[in-house]
Length: 473
Image (cartoon, rainbow, N blue to C red):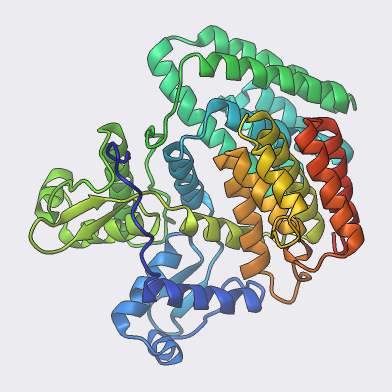
């Protein structure tokens, strides 16, 4: 999915009515705190409740069914049933977006440093006998486990749903780049054996209670992987790699619905593999029905999935057909935030991860060579400057200066979770406040001073202290 040379990204289209209805259904589910299995109402009752047509309601339900948030059950006692959300389609949507945004190997590895070191610290504090077995078996590759399973196990054993999900996303993105690199480098058996040995060393250090050694070993392991990958893979904005199908729908769905998910994945993979441009028309409905050997209803269902994740859309009229879209992470971000709300993330889960994301952005900004020191100094000195007036504005500016699409997207997930979900169960987001007192302003000035001076350690120290002392953190 690439933009043609010299072409600007298209404007974001207004939110569809069906998506608005889907969000209202989600609001109702979150307010009831995820009553799994509860019937929200019949189709007729829901149409009356939301004041929409049958077609709009059904499209809204399809949007939510794809992530298993709800399922429409037929027959006596049927209706819209609350389900257990599955983040996997959204994770793949995020991977598509980050590849399109040109996330580099270095940026992905930097984010993995941040989150996997946190995971090691958390695992070391709460490791159980069962956790020891899980670590060792995932590190050794028992039962046909893949190398990336060790890193996913670290996230799962951390006990923090945010860490678990972020590591899953980063491992998936690394797997995409690894797949590409293997296609270039050929046999990588030696590299795989070295990775297995490093996994075992990290696992044994954690088991032995040597958290610092495990973290040091992790850094060396990821550095080695980054060196190998960056020599082979150079993703550019708009380039991507197919990493597998999107057939992620639940077994109890009708066969046509499962087939639509698979077809959506095949279309997505073909768009990526063939290097199609954003805005390019790929063919008519009849062309795709013939190409994939499916019915019109299955094809149209697959297009709804692709539209939801901003991959492709059908355009009607002369010159119409399936058009490649510019990837938009909004739907994936909301789905991931919704899943984390379902997992019951706590303020402490969010606080620890968010602190590290902010510090990661600061580090990336200072190392990017595009810090904009003069602008930061001007912002600091201008009394009417937003960035000189509030913590959130300064941190937003730092994130932008980092140029790191991975950390910027992860910040968006956390903000969406605060803003849209968990109503009544979490305090208002303290970091979005623009009401800064003199002491707060002095702290922000001190952070900017350290950044302008190029003192990364001092800037991190001051930012960490500011976040921890900020009311509400």
